[in-house]
Length: 464
Image (tube, rainbow, N blue to C red):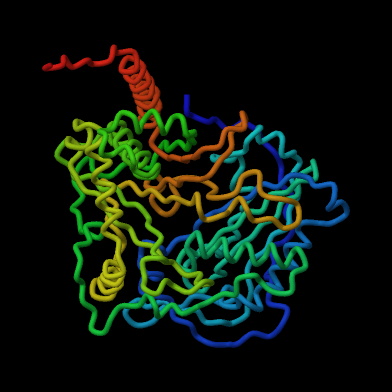
């Protein structure tokens, strides 16, 4: 069984009054434009991140909230745009006014120990809204703090670091760069090991903008009955895939696809199962959007230290009937093709489309978005207490449409097995079907492989 359940625990959190943490030194008051990738409608939301840290005897007497708060103030001297506020100009163009007003910080205590979250904490987390408090009037896109951080001390001596980011400012890699800088300051470093680079103009549209590629991810799709999933009765659950499970899935593919990456295999597998579980009209178009880090796609690559959004949403497109009734290899081929489309020209074409089409949201009708953060490094961030027990997205289904997105998070389960954790959000009936389909599918694959392995070898009679 690949399903992971969260312990049903209830606890109280005592919060201090939220405060604004400002840079320890004066910073420039200037205006910085976001890129034409940053300010698309698809990224105009706040994304929650959470990190769990164990008690460390070597840090006895040190208060993690105080350490992190002071580190943020020092770090904001380097990352001072985060202390500003987002404004909107003509053509819905977003820019940061670097006002130095600061980011929101909350200090809290919880009457719970880390052990009560289970042997291997994972989403969905109980009482998440208590661990990352939504300060009233703080979660708008414009004229609001760009970051909210809450540090919650646990009764065992461990703590939880939770963060909410205005996604227009950074992607996962940029956010980890920022968090690492805070952690380095918390460990008494004098400056971040990687200095921040703004240079958002590198991902701006050309002059004149020229859309040269097909971008089905931004198609305008009419809403018909049964196309939109109801947000009522949504359930969050996580699924764990160790290397042996991925290997089982891979072995069912045709020989020419068995060298595919884990991302391509797992993404195609989940997309197909999720579609079967919903289930949509057979004729409905289904979209699989995968985030592709584009930093290395440029020649030369984007500079080290660039912390803006540097990814695109290439899309695999087919009908529900074709996706569900064809073998898994069909979906794998679609995912591979979508990923391969991302080139420097493709990224520039997306930026041009943003300008010419009014910075649209990607199509949400019949869509499923998968974001791989296994290489982002959330779990590596440490403030002096060691690496995170869990580090990464606080839940699946982030953003205004809760069932849309899943993340791939590096994870070690309670048995010590390393693998991929996939938080998923679906309506209750669909989730029940998904779990049943997942179990049945994996068992069938394992049985098929075992039967194939016990077949007698095929002998070809010699013609001599």
